[in-house]
Amino acid sequence: MSSDTWPVHGPWTQEHCDEGIEEGKRQRKEEALSKVRALARLAGWAQGRIEGWLQGWIEAVLVVLEARGVRVSAVDRERVTGCRDADQLEVWLRRSVAVESPQELFAGPEPARSA
Image (cartoon, rainbow, N blue to C red):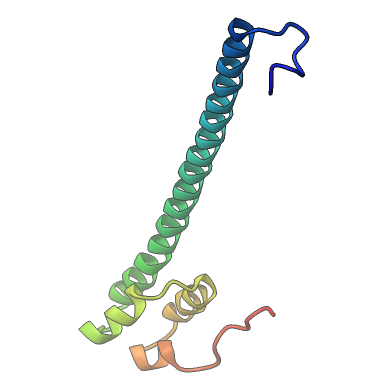
């Protein structure tokens, strides 16, 4: 803002007006950064919840197979623990209560994917 647009002209007025403008800019910047930080924390929280939920499904598949005496190789265990597809994990969990081998667990149609 220039001094000729301010109702009271003079260096003192201009100096304080400029300080006010800069303070307003700093406050807006801090508000924006605060919102970005809050959104990042929320995204991290949501990701953690999803990871925890997936880990629960993974452990359930492996526990059911173990409880039923189905031997799971390291390669098959890695396939289950590496899965991040909730639909696939649900399919495997449902199959785990009836299969006799990991090959049966992994056989069959894959879950339908929504377009």
